[in-house]
Amino acid sequence: MSMLPYLRAAVRPALRKSTPVQPGYDTTRDPSASSAVVDCAVYRDGRRAQGDCLTPREALRRVREDGGFAWIGLHEPTHDEFAGIAATFGLHPLAVEDAVHAHQRPKLERYDETLFTVFKTIHYVEHAELTATSEVVETGEVMCFTGPDFVITVRHGGQGSLRSLRHRLQDDPELLSRGPSAVLHSIADHVVDGYIAVAAAVQDDIDEVESAVFAAPAKGVARGGDAGRIYQLKREVLEFKRAVSPLLRPMELLSERPMRLVDPDIQKYFRDVADHLARVHEQVIGFDELLNSILQANLAQASVAQNEDMRKITSWAAIIAVPTMICGVYGMNFDHMPELHWKYGYPLVMAAIVGSCFAIHRTLRRNGWL
Image (cartoon, rainbow, N blue to C red):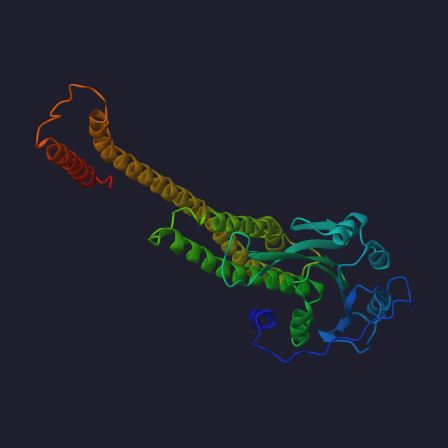
């Protein structure tokens, strides 16, 4: 029986009623307990086992005694808070250091019997108008330790909560019965679906900037005023690219290379995630190239506008030069001036000035300088 309908239902569900938040945890019971724990549960046959306020050590004991797997979720743990959990589950010190300090590049690493996966989450920041200082995307991180009978997720940043994902998976026991690899797939699909939504929103911002650049400027408004907005949007797209590009290789490995910790039936569906990720990657590369072209077009328009202004200034200077020259000649204090005592000398000179200026103005206007 194909699992595709169940996977789709788990990661792209309709709106559901919110599930009550799990109770808090008593951090004094054993060293594996931590105030950074958001949720800790045991899943057996795809269903959440009874028992609230479990500590990670208790969850692991129940799993080892009765089967199933444990899923522990943490939010921004400190080194001391994570040390007990790391010791309980035998996590590698290098992976623990990466999980605590965050700011890691998306990657997939194997340490003995544990897979360590890093995802960068992307959240689109709503804004009424894109400016030169607008924040377009906000990043976070989700680290996932996947073992034979446990999943430990460590989240950094205010976005990318996995609570709703956990609730959706709990509504699909058949999927959860596949074990930790099903959780890993759902997290990957959840993150990549977020990329798709952000890419669509960023596309709207790029379309808006593109329309503004190539629209006719209002009278009196100089070209080139959009350069700041374009550059800021380009910086945000670069941040988006840093989240998407490094994840291509890990998704390729999860979808193509057989792994003992990944259920073969689940591995097939990593290909779907890898395909969506590749499509988003192509979009982000396209955004970067398009913004380069828009920025170059904007700068070219500014240069053309400056050239037009210089031609107009030069044209008016040429027109003004004619009366300046003629008046300069008649302003000299010489005894023998041409036409000095002629009755029609003044009107003739004024007519010559006006005629010359009109002829120069018409010539310059015909040539597009005015």
